[in-house]
Image (cartoon, rainbow, N blue to C red; front, side, top):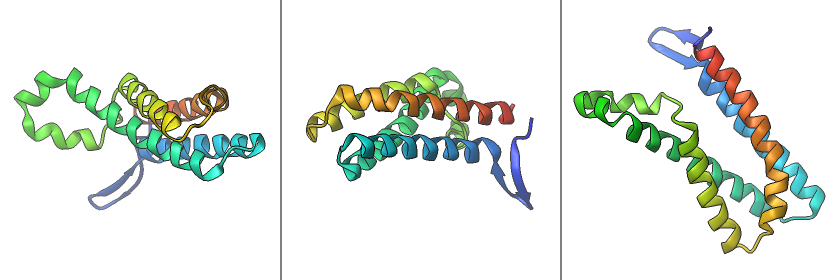
Length: 137
């Protein structure tokens, strides 16, 4: 386990966070590349990726708070730790799927084509992100 990538004084850069950022960037890169090959509007796909990314992060953290509600009610000061934690995968999946469907409908993007293109991006991002979980212990 290697939870801290860089540690200088009281500042540290968590390995999990760095690897998670790499996972998101690689997933977005792969989706944009596939969208360009399919002739889809690259900027809309990039914006779609950012909406999905933000909703995944927020959804994962929200479900973490819901699942650990009793703990946070007993120790409200621990709410700040939600910012440092990864969250619960299913919360991110539910929020990202909901926001993704909304965005595709709003911009009239081909949902099934994007889902087919996005599946490898999600799988690759998840695989890379799991390395971060392993590093965090």
